[in-house]
Image 1 (cartoon, rainbow, N blue to C red):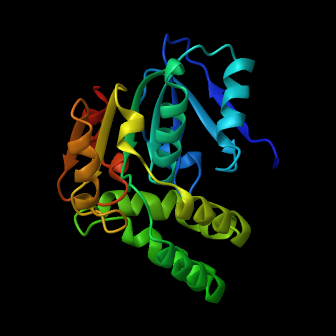
Image 2: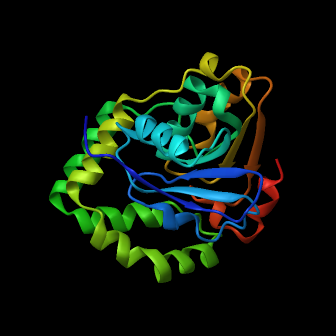
Length: 230
């Protein structure tokens, strides 16, 4: 079944709790700049393959009847999957920089690059997450997270995430009836915005926010708070 994941609840005494799910090759610290009035629930250690079970256990342990979810990149796939299966526990779901599915060939190519030079590939990946217009966000990332991530992200953890990405796919019909907000950067190189249009069009009740001059990490922008007014 795999090792149990660990979640941490930052209780502000608010009525609402928001689960923040990070993407591949990052951790919960990627969301440190988000200004939330709600309580925060974050996965400190987790496997995407046991995420559903571990989250259900954490909600039970903390008596959380309902939550909202913000998932980014790989975390958005996890958010969509959990929300579709356990909609009775969900208030709202925000899917940031999500891709409906990843091609297995491209995933295998990433694995080859990681085996050849893990640090070099990660450095390029993180840099590609930002558009040329996001110097402030890139500077923040380099100062606060880059070195730690390159040192921390081991091959086994990265490969597990890639295996999950190669198997995951969002089926729009599974999300019908849920309150879904898509947020996407118009300059996203990792998950091009065109890929999300099909999902948006099939989920007619969903909300879609595109952010110009922005790459794969739109939540690091100073003006992202406006997107949280859902």
